[in-house]
Length: 320
Image 1 (cartoon, rainbow, N blue to C red):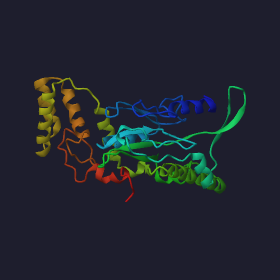
Image 2 (image 1 turned 60 degrees about the vertical axis):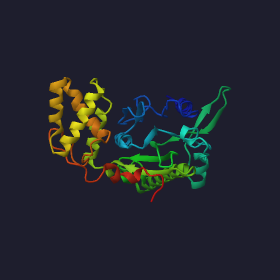
Image 3 (image 1 turned 30 degrees about the vertical axis):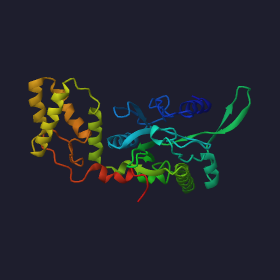
Image 4 (image 1 turned 180 degrees about the vertical axis):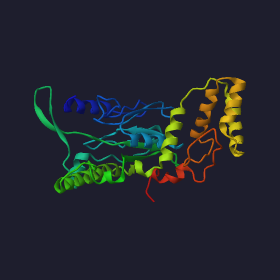
């Protein structure tokens, strides 16, 4: 795919999004589109009713963490940062009717202001004329959250594998002092560009990295998410009764797998009851300790500190 084809594809996907339509990210998690060497994932979300396209392991982890939050309304992954002034991401959302959220300043204007050289490409129009155009950058995860006021807000998550990657690109590569300075300047200005872009519309940007999440939490989120959308064929009354039995067993320190085996012996389809254990944890019906491995054949410990309390600051509209 040529740079011009890539440019036209991004604009066609992102240029005219309206709430109520199916969101399409700038870049899909497929090998022909994702950056070379990406650890792409496609996450089928029951909550959002669509597939999320994430381009790295850190993006996958943070997307799962966001989807676990009960106040999440939507996620726009790989969101285009418009080179020119554009409407607020929540403009036109049904819950913002009657409000007038401020527009986003274009990245081209911001880049000029902060002294950052904006990426450009040469395109050829239908008349054969060649000209330079600013190539759009893209973000990682833009979260849309419900609030106590009833009016949703957005939080932008910029995602890396390690914290230091925000201050220097190609962090692990061998380089001269001159090249290192260039890479540091580029990374810091690119981060500032995104921060200023969203701040122009009152949207907070949070820099998140994989090294800030406990590895056990990462494994637990991955396990629960893989189970959360599995279908259940048993009657809803049976499953409701099963959930009550799980809560009783959990409170009394009984391994939850034992309850699933009992229900499976009586009603059949044992695996559905096992999956339902993970689904009840995912939907927060069971408040377990996320900082220990979820082993359902062992008694699970209750949460000493809620996962969303530990990482809650990542979701708030305004930094404390």
